[in-house]
Amino acid sequence: MTIHKTRGILYRVAKYLGDIQAISSANPEKVAKRVGRRMTGKVTGKAMRKLFK
Image (cartoon, rainbow, N blue to C red):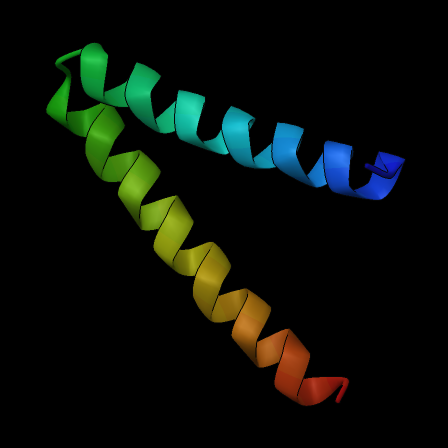
């Protein structure tokens, strides 16, 4: 396993742990903020991919 793959796995795990932490806080504002930021990130990523393709 390369460092690149290991780093990717660690980032993915950290992302999911952040989701779990927001949900376990039982604060709907934190969950909504997290969902909104994830959606914004996905849209921005797709736009950047198309822009620099």
